[in-house]
Image (cartoon, rainbow, N blue to C red; front, side):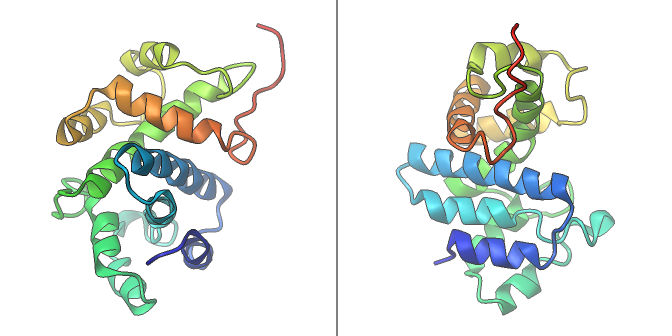
Length: 190
């Protein structure tokens, strides 16, 4: 089974830009929280989250076209590679998310972008972010406008869950790693 350490090693061979490393970590920790929700192995799901944008920095216009063979050649389980490919469903792949892991990755990829943006605006970062505050920002389409809310909604529907419930799980998972994610806030008073 893919370990988080192995996923980081593989990701480090392709991803060097700080914002992409941070995004991989956000997705990684959100996926760990989703795994706990579904009674699955958090580290395994974190590892898949860590690797989800494996080829993006090198091939942004051909995202996920340079992922399958290298990861399979590196010994990554085909089911994990399929999960990674499925997060591009309808965008750059035709691999439909069918398992809870795949549906979760499809959903949290964009969702963590809004959570991160929301946390960065708060004096205490993510440490005191509640889902109510997140939902206000989620409904404001001008906020973190590049994050695809329709895709997030579609992913939540695939999971049979409400956006607020998935967001609450992901926020909790990211809070546990606030310092590593740079989301502890500025410390300024509100």
